[in-house]
Length: 312
Image (cartoon, rainbow, N blue to C red):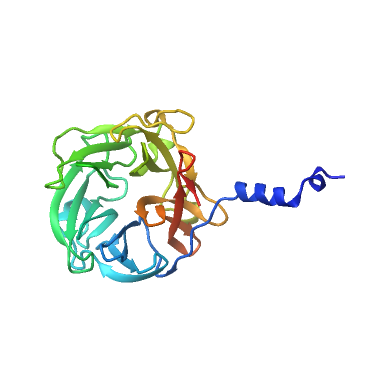
């Protein structure tokens, strides 16, 4: 007799459910995105901004059905050309925050593998194409720096504004911003996380506060290779947004630590390039993943009840 036959089927089903990785929630419409960021207008409209020529804009009334609306910069972004090496405004990894009735959008200008990179930001009162104003350069890097100024993420913590950034090299950094300008208030750059393996493959940082902790999410390993991508989402936590992040095993993120949140599973390949937003039903994880048909929008809720984020 097999041992399996002695175990109640309900317990087997429960165990299987606990071991399963939850797939992306249902989304429909135009969802072919890369490096998505999601925010919500004061009227309740959802916006997703993503990597692309001119930075792509999609909207939804229900967080499920998405419509392509156009570009942040339909006529290019000439102020970024020195960093992208193009004249068409090919820009990366935007990060959106809504404050009152104003959209703040931080975004990256670079070329693949280059340390000649910059982060800019823009403002809008509607979030729609044709409504954005260029607010200029926020920060930049060159080959003389030991980090890379891409993949921005804004954290507003009370009256304090922080921008995390970084890709490969010496990892994820933090700059303090002035709330009045949206730009750095000093030249100080603080290290938050470093990858000690895989050629330093860590990027796409997001700092999210929940309860007493600050959680630093990052993407590890290889992006942008279609179904050969090995991207995966990792996390650590700290009592401070400015450092001290450790993973679930207590390993410092400055020593290569990082607890897996979401990796490849069930035909969902290379999830990463993530963002976190708070909605009426709690924290929401937004990311892209690959199938043989391309790169698509993934949306899941996060459960922090154990003290660590779990995809649900």
